Amino acid sequence: MSLALQLEQVSLTYATRRGEIEALKEVDLRIAPGEFVAVLGPSGCGKSTMLKLAAGLLRASHGSIAVAGQAIAGPSRRSGVVFQKPNLLPWKSVLNNVLLPAQTLGLSLAQARPRAMELLELVGLAGFANDYPFELSGGMQQRVGIARMLLHDPDLLLMDEPFAALDALSRELLTLELQRIWSTYRKSALFITHSIQEAVFLADRVLVMSPRPGRIIEELVIPLARPRTLDTLHDREFADICHHLRRHFTHA
Amino acid sequence: MRKSSKLFPQLWSLLQSALYPLTSLAVLILIWDQAVRLWAIPDYLLPAPAAVFEALYGGFANGSLWPHIGVTLAETFAGYAIGSLLAVLFGALLAESKTFERFVYPLLIGLQATPKVALGPIILVWFGFGAASKVVLVALVCFFPLFVNTINGIRRTDPDLLDACRAFSASRLYLLLHVKFPAAASDVFAGLQIGVSLALIGAVVAEFLSAQSGLGYLIASSSVSMSVATMFSGVILLALIGLIGAQIVRWLQSYLIFWEPGAHRARSRQERP
Image (cartoon, rainbow over all chains, first blue to last red; front, side, top):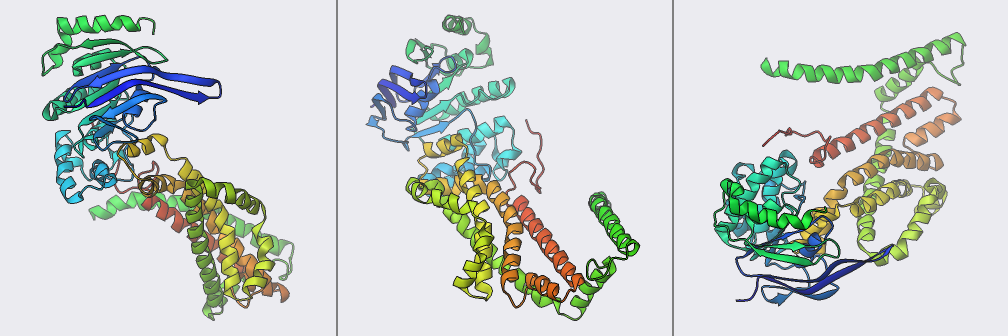
């Protein structure tokens, strides 16, 4: 079976008024089917750039990117994305926001609608299908974003600091729920974050990126058993792993 | 009973907010009236408020005002609708197409700097002395602010929102219709708002130039016969049309763009966990 996502020697430089900026340098990344990989890095290290590359929103200057073994030239229907901002369409109801991938990919709405309702239930928003985003809290909006990401049943989930803008409590809750949702579907996932705990809690494998130009400087398999719970956060092993990763960021 | 007691505070606050400007208006009319009496200003310069009211009332009573109102309303509305539709269409085209922007935009900016009413006599020559020339001038006058606003609104669409939709393979047409247009809606309405008063200016100027009816014609022709009271009633009617038009646009805006903060909405924002 081919890799869910593969980045090979990917570099990205962009031109600014003050000359070229090297955002990513020779990044290699492989995500196996069903694997949850977190990328951990300081702000401005190009980790969001990496996700945009994987989502087909940016083109690499060098190197190749393949989703499910196929080189991509743009957004792939095999991937679903959530961002730091919920990025919902304010003029569409919650249900229609979740249905967005069905509309853009030309899927049958008759089939997509019951699935959207199912997903809304999965993310705990069963009664909110006809509400509008401005009527929801930030955490609820992000749940809608997660449901939207899953609608077209993508093989690869791309998540760019989805909980970074939330308050601490919603964040913890949603992290737990994301694990539950991921366990239900066992999708491959690329999860970008600057929170060590979040990365260790969620991932099978954590990659650490250096400040610009971003490159991967450490790779760590997380052996913690699943399902991980709030108690895991107080595990000796969990603390040791976090402590170990922490040393990369002592200068930040 | 319960319903009315719930409605009452709202009605009261509405009355109150209307009361303040009405008070100033009443004071203004009073000063006007007293000034006319005090300095014995002749009728052909400034008629007393009562004379203007009489002219208005008489005009409505004998039916002579209605055709003028009807003509001006029809011309203004037709021109406004055509001008606005073209402005949004061209604005979207220009915001989306680089080629169009390179070739056409500079010319349109040049045309924008020209006072459009200066084209009035030329339009008269081209489109004749009937309603067509009035409609064209109105359309031309209210085109530009809306055109520029549409371009700006579309260009100011949140790039992250566009990226999010692109990540799900959204086509360019989808982005334009479902993302950019709604995102530009409040700018479009700002342009429509400006357009209301500009459209009336266009209609009146066109009627000044040459017309057989309409409120602009009424004012211009009354100037010849020195019936200033009639001129005033024309101005008052135009002001009322402008006010009502702007209010309709405002109401449409808050109804259609329900998601914007500050919009009057039926649903209320609730705190939810």
